[in-house]
Amino acid sequence: MKVFISADIEGVAGVVHREHTARDGREHDRARMLMTEEVNACIEGALSWGATEVVVNDSHGTMRNLIPEAIHPEAEYITGSPKILAMMEGINPEFDAAIFLGYHSRMGNDGILNHTFHGGVIQNIRINHRDMGEIALNAGIAGVFGVPVVLVTGCQHAAGEALEFIPNVETAIVKHTINRQSAKNLSPQKARCLIKEKTIASLSRLPTFQPVSLQGPFEVEITYLHPGLADAAGILPIVERVNQTTHRFETDEFITAFRYIRSLIAIAGALN
Ligand SMILES: [Zn+2]
Image (cartoon, rainbow, N blue to C red):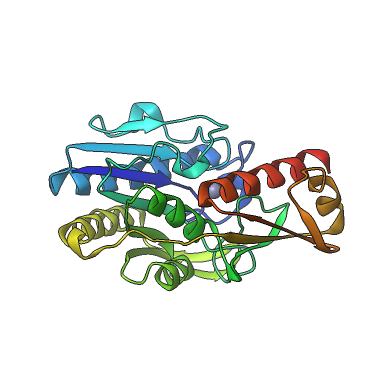
């Protein structure tokens, strides 16, 4: 059995602030260790259920957060950025299960540190008239490769968002959001125990999961935080301007849609 883990940081127990998540944050190194140890708990769970291969993709910011010396020795990890599939780089049809660790809800939803890919650019992403955050988009990518998402860890709102989009998914709630920058957390030890337990629980019912299957063509609408961002991203010729802050485009392939979304975010962020 092969298990793919996409590891973000905002949904890790104890992480509530930019000082935890940003490269220059005073608490960033501590948050990286908390993230790495939650990943290790997940790896231990997968190995104890018989996984023969575990690959972890570092999925936050610079994608250089996992602490190499501290990662479980039996897992391989993908580090660095940019990567074409970003948070899902490394996924392929040989994996039996995907796990989203330390995830968060989409921009504007309730949930600790909610955002969608870039908190300074994106207000909302809709595909075929459905709001899509990172959980939904990344589950869609896993689905293209025929891999089911079996477990999502994070706050209660990330868990709720996951269940809306992946009805059968296992969740591990390691903290309860109070507001966007505060939460009631499990202790690191309890959070790790829960993640290990839930990893085993999800893999033990692997045959009950289906990959998310999204049918094209895809109509994508991207709403930015302000019109200047739409002005900047508008240089990409695929988009049509719907209103001051929204672009739309169409494509038949989900991965192509995702790559355009990432391109628009990068251009908007760079030129504004
Ligand atoms: Zn992140």
